[in-house]
Image (cartoon, rainbow, N blue to C red; front, side):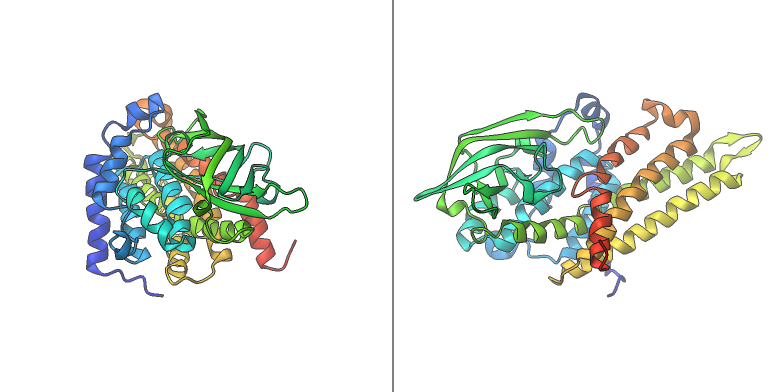
Length: 380
């Protein structure tokens, strides 16, 4: 494992940060207030080459290693600390594109990856249901096999990109009361039988979170991703990669938080001196730096393993657990460093906390991650 990034890789991060600062960040306050997902920003990300970065060249991608995507996402997170937009990007990359890359047929890859890479299509990962949460074995959405395809019926909840998606990756139970096996189906653009509604949230408001209802939604035989009945194994592989990578942009966001806290502590004066001279403030900002450094090491290690197609259930869950909780705490510490000003919306720091709260819930709650880690240790 070597974390001495090449100059080209570091340039990727710097360039991504500059792009995000100038092209994505402007207008965030309005989008956040209105709870708006802007497709124009999606197009800019696609034109920048984000979605095609690790796609093999034979499918229209750039064929770059996973580490390059990691650093690019980190840079984008710094330049545009819009957690909602980063959540939407993660759902698209890790919940849709990566499963297609890993488990799709050549025909599926050629049909779907170009549109997902160039921004024409947005992907949504449909797993969670209102009553199932993280328990994928309790999924009730059904897929009825027919001679010429499948019929989907059921409701998915908390689907990032759901209301704006063109391509849906859907985990379903085989419509057979004697079997509990799952299948994973890809619903292509233009398919009928789908209804969506937006679910308003307290944070990540620039992501389109929603409910997706499948009503006699018919797809062809070629919609099956992987093998029939292998949905659980496919989900486990996909979510492991997601947990390893979904907080890559948050590393950039946390660096932005640290810079804001440091600059404010050096500038704001109280009792005749800058507040950074007070030990309580200095230690609080120091803790933010420690959390960032540990978060980087955990995410880098998990990404390094997944970039080599290695299993990393423990490493991915540890990274997801630690970074999500660290992001919440650093968001609180940033507000406390700003004092009363941090509680005001127009100072531009309170949105970090609203966005961070979702991180301890999506991709498996913190409690779920602790359970996975315990099982890896032979406990529970």
